[in-house]
Image (cartoon, rainbow, N blue to C red; front, side, top):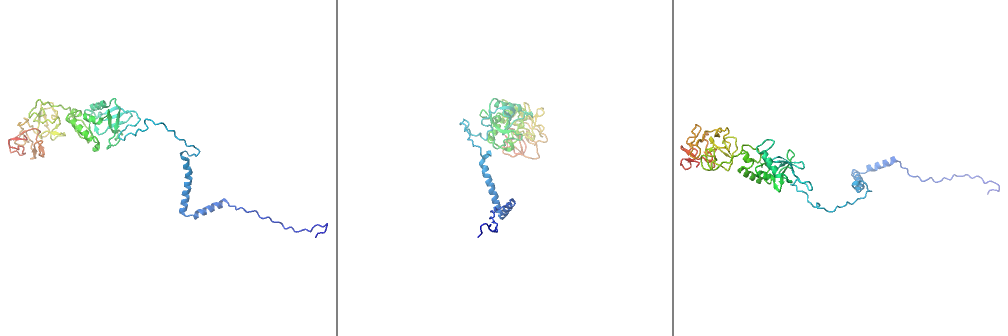
Length: 395
């Protein structure tokens, strides 16, 4: 006890220790990085690849939701549908036509050649599958061919139609197509009129090839267009047309000089008339389709439609390697030059024993007699032309 008035004895105060505050785990940034790297390294390679791909996918999902605008705040605006019009259900133009729906109608702005035009839209068109004489080269009948084409297209709208076997453009970047005007194929009409010829580039024959050839053959037989004005022109559809030769003069059938009534007037010996088809001197550079007798020199007394008298001296084919046949017609007197085969009149030039056969027969030559000529046979007849022994060969 403590007596009154005394202070209580001092008591040793034991300091009261408060509990330490709760320690918050302190993790530094470097330690987090180390931990993450260690965790990553513990993953396998497959897991690492999967995690990377998954992260990429998660990033792409919100981006795709934004759409093309790139901003999710934008409100999609529903497009206003216009009322249907007359052109709504118009089908696209065919692949074989060059015109475009709604475009201005095409017309021909300029005719360059008989087979080339420039359109109102600026394109140059090379007419497919045909060839016409060139104006720039000064070819025979070139201006007439161009005028024919101009007449067909002047004042009319046109359209183009492709030829599937040909490229769309040529090496000059010209459009290659058929030209349609007034509902007709202008390419075909030009060939029918003799203003152009078939031309099958690299022998690529299109859908109208047979019609083009038939039309060209008919025009040539009738001497229409270039076939009459340039009578030496060749019909060769795998090459561009090259017109040549002078104007064809149709023979009059009212008279004939030598031979029967179907001989071409003005030639002796007789040259059978084949509807105006051309003759060339045998052995020369001409391409027929008919040829004179080898070695026979013809007397030319009229307009010379076959152009056999090259120097105008009245003798045809005198430079083709033979002697004059003289006389003409059946039974005409043949030449007796040293180069003629004995026993035949007119002359048949001797070619080292090579055989002759009658023109138009079944023999195989290599040499043939003149078309329509009947030969007088007085010797042994080595060529066997007198089949019945009556003294006349190829009758």
